[in-house]
Image 1 (cartoon, rainbow, N blue to C red):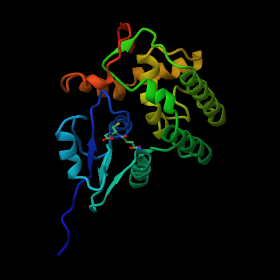
Image 2: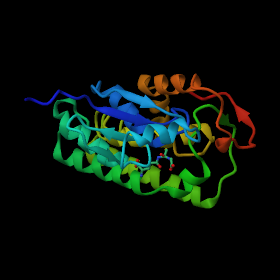
Image 3: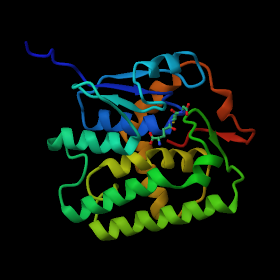
Length: 231
Ligand SMILES: N[C@@H](CCC(=O)N[C@@H](CS)C(=O)NCC(=O)O)C(=O)O
């Protein structure tokens, strides 16, 4: 007897706060992937209840594949989606640009701990200019450098780093949100890249849907002077 055809199933957290969820959620939206998403809010009982259906994952995003296995880790999920939907262009076609994009996404996945730790993603608020440490400045200078190098290496003609929007750009979307939301100072080129994310329709849809998900999560609140959301 043949097995029933199963669907993909993707577990995600708060759109406003879960940066790893955002990366994969943006890929699903932007590349029109047939991957149904379910959401549970961090710090609620619904979160472990959802993840209980996605064993052995303990974090979001978590992807159940049609054949039944579950994988977590954003980069693995992005790679797997790129492999399973090869006609959608999640990675650049050209080998050189693809290599650059892979390196960018990997560095994002493995690093930028000071920026991530001091400026947790919060798409519900913008601060005029958050006081951040020199270590965050070091992360920002590194981002400027690798973004500029990627543009040069791939001769990217448009707003994205390696030609058309790809996994590397989705991986930096939450970084763009942090730079914009915390009022962090970056080079003009980097600021243009941040603006491209803020103007991206998939980014805007994600952010607007997050605003309707319920009360603010106190963990992400900071006592800095606020300003209007810049996008
Ligand atoms: N390295 C993981 C990190 C995932 C992660 O930390 N997700 C957070 C939400 S953004 C989470 O599930 N937190 C819940 C917990 O740690 O209990 C990835 O790339 O997916």
